[in-house]
Image 1: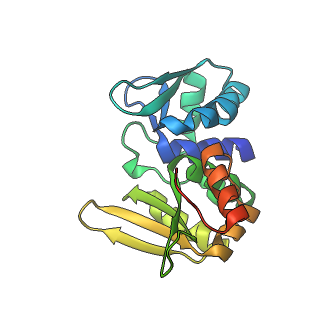
Image 2: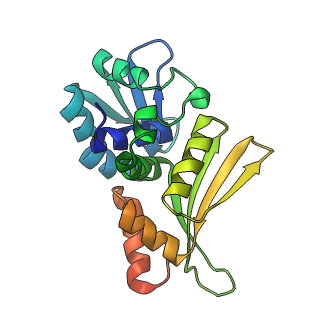
Length: 208
């Protein structure tokens, strides 16, 4: 059974995660700023639903954190609902999530919190004020699935294919779209949430 919290985990795995091609290991890798998010949100969900030990360490080869759970029950669950071992090029949104609109929002939240970006551009002004939610993915069934649910949720977005890297860029732009995102989807990643809150308070965003 997939509930809203499991749907959110599905979003995080399709975002920055991976099912190992030979072992029963699920990994999620994110920036060094994601430590609080992993500890406060993702690890507790894995422990709650799969009763397994979750490991977390800072990677020496890059400025990021590496989280994994080696648990056959959890691994088989995600395989059974449609995830693929190794490369995610054949993975889309699990059919049980696609069929249940109540699960779209938590799925999108998990996807954004791990693999989405919230940027602010200057447009024609001297300060960064114009919000842009952005996703970039390699070609996979996820592209078509994401198009479908964003459209059905009423978001205005652009989709651009970068032929140099065979990637697809989704962009949801403007104040009304960002406020709609916060009302419908929300943000659980503390770093991204603080960025939104700063913009909401000041009307601009000044990077650190």
